[in-house]
Length: 342
Image (cartoon, rainbow, N blue to C red; front, side, top):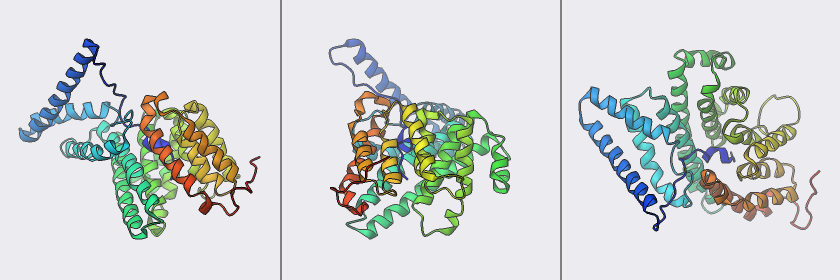
């Protein structure tokens, strides 16, 4: 699975204070005190009586969930890689006390999905040529993280719709008829994490058989809010349409339609759609010229132009460079004999 939407919702932008501006410095100090206050509240919540503990956890959960995740504007993916596990485990700890906290369930589902894709699955792909056993172990870990994320997403949907899990098991499309636009984020992250787990489980027929549930979730999300998160659903479907079962029409045409809409909704400032088209469509069509063009367009995006998408773009640009280095393995024709895209 290759889509920037998987890593596009990690926290709000953070600006470094201007050392020459007293007001900015004061704001920075205040933010530091707020963070220490939140940490103190977490420690107190874990130590005190049940009623106060639940109240404190809810407050902290609201703060974490309202932040939008973590790290979206950071320019250092390795720093985020090191810091994200603490944030994820903190949210899981809070959910033990407040298991029906909708915001935390959504944030945990999205956070585990993004972490698994950016820092586990990508590492597995890069390790494949050098160490097959290491790559296999990393993909197994990625699958576990994706399924963990999926389960939090399903829990979130059940909180909002108490009969959801039983109804979904009987008939996914009918069960999803009760969902509304406010459920789109949960629908999206549940579908994406589930699809990602399937994508790294080619040897697991039981998991692959879950594809209809994934399709029901993402199709309902598209129906309810096709413009969600600047085209995230369309960006995901670029890749997914190429493996969708039993759909009408040409999968390439469907994928290209989603690509065009994803680029339109993101203003061409997200690297993910370009990388997805190159990897899912251009390689299958053995169109090396288009492959190169899409990756160059992804790499030409300035990550600083949209700070809230900085980390997502940096991660996807890393994948674009990796794909460029693998071009000779992906295409039968040599570099000088490129096919011209229609």
